[in-house]
Image 1 (tube, rainbow, N blue to C red):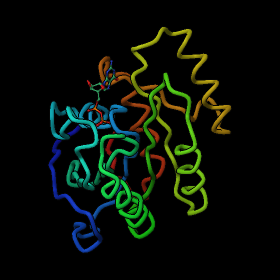
Image 2: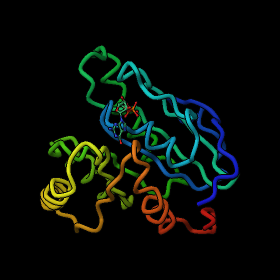
Image 3: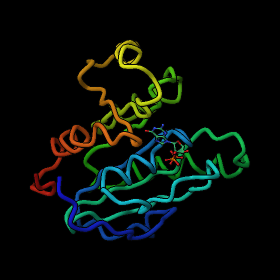
Length: 199
Ligand code: GDP
C-alpha cells in the first residue's frame, strides 16, 4: 500500500459532526494504551498523524482521517482506562455504539488487542455486538515484539481459541518493528467495495 496522502479531517462526538460519508471507512477500536495510535501511524506511514496517548484515555473523541483521498480511517476512543471520570466513561459506550450502528459507509472494524493479554468480557461483548450487526471484525494482536516468537505462536493460538476464530484471522503486528502492515491492509482490502486501497 503506497500512501500518497494522509490527513486529519475532523473529530466528532455525535453524528451531526461526522464528515460527509463520501469514502468507505474502517474503524479502529481497542483498550486505552493498547497501541492503537502507534498502529495507525505505522499503517499510514506517518510519524505522528494520530496523537499517541502519553496520558492514556485522553483521546475521547472519534477522529476521522482521509487516506489517499479514497479511504477513511476512524480512530475510536480507547476504552477501559481507570482514570477516566465515570461520567465520561458512561458517554463513551453510546458514542461508539451510535457511530458503529449508524455509519453507512463503515465497511469493517479493526479490534486491536495486546498479544500479551487474555481477551476479557469487553472483547467478547464487542465481537458479539459486531457479529449481530453483520459488521466484519479484523482482530489484530499488537506489541508482538515484546514476546518471543514461540510465545507469539502460543498466545495467538490461545486467543484464537478463546475468541472462537481461526488462527489465520488474527493478524500479528508490531508498531515498533513495523511488522504486519501488509497483512492489515490486505484484510481491509477484502472489505472494500471498490478500489479504495491501491496495491
Ligand atoms: P493507544 O492509547 O492505544 O493509542 O496507544 P499508543 O499508540 O499511544 O501506545 C501506548 C504505548 O505503547 C506507547 O508507549 C507506545 O510507544 C507503546 N507501543 C505501541 N505499540 C507498540 C509496539 O508494537 N511495540 C512496543 N514495544 N510498544 C508499543
